[in-house]
Length: 281
Figure (cartoon, rainbow, N blue to C red):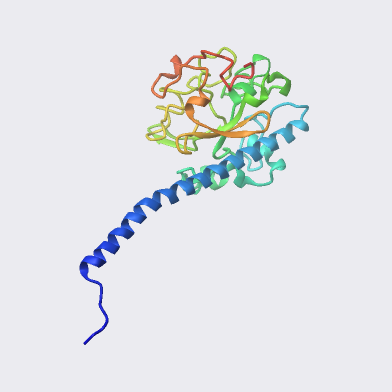
């Protein structure tokens, strides 16, 4: 007589069901933990960028960095941007990449002079600076570059550095009938209607902006311009005093009438004291 008893089919199915239930409970927890780690790594990136910019300014008479100039970069391209200018203070290009970006930077272009391997440093990768306000010395716009920006301002022109945006998570690329699109700046929410900002004709947030219905296809057209909300619906933001924090779009657009479906030309500043992009708040 066999003294050993095997599992019955019912018992086996019960064990499998229990394992499946545990997996269903734990996998989302693991995913959330992974996302939290990526968000923290990105926050560290923005912090390191910000500190490097402050060191750059210390060597530049407290003048902010230029988003993009018409000089030639080390790869021979016209358009030497802020990521190159700040790199000597960082010495690590990986700090301009975000592990949570859904676009693989090395598979965006197929080759040639637009190959991402040649351009990812030039384009600033996953972060953009607040050029609408920080590159607007003396209210001069459109005289330096086609993008409409002016010369960089001095640190003394920023009334409240601790609440003024320096840089934020930026969309890398979008693809629609107009093709690929990317840049090195982060568009401010109400820059189209603001009287003291430099911007492109289709800048800002909302429908009709460069970062929404123009140049970006769903789901990238989030109504937040070219500002990426890839971290659980929000972004990591660095400020002019050197600190960084995570913010949802509503916090980034505070002091405006923004919502994600409103036309960019209808977004206005309603309370300058809460609008963290303007240097005069």
